[in-house]
Length: 234
Image (cartoon, rainbow, N blue to C red):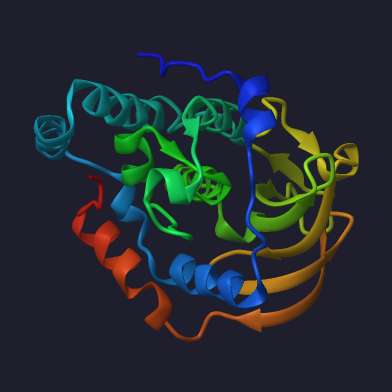
């Protein structure tokens, strides 16, 4: 089953990204540290119940996601990156204020797919947890806070490090192709982080460790939604 493609060019022109300050970035680190990857695996019964509550299309998107993970279980890591990136990039881009009626809401992958919409954080989070479930170690991945220079807006992408010292690959909802950070002069890297740590970055690379995840309070609600497979979709 294929998700309905979005009009990338049109969406790009309309995208407006909020400035993410350091405290918000630290909050997401806490969430990534606390959320178990089991939250991305759904039973047939759970999917059917989500379908009853949110409609056939939501059920189909969740089913396609679960099938994707099953199909990629033994695939090479490069194929996992390509297909997970392409899968989620078909979801609609929507600002939080329009989609969730909140200034800043970071959705779980289930909420993202059920509602068929989200902003740059939601794309990145969904890719991060799906790839982690597929066996990609969190040490190879970071969520990167960048500035999209052509849009003059804050933005977030998922970065993947083939090795510790490598220039990372960038998985971005703005474009379909996965490129290395040095091939993306349109992105100015500021911070990068995963479930463990926060770094300042230079040219896409982790340069200076500036924080760690040691408290969970800011993301108790997100953890609860994923652990219990509860969703906040109107």
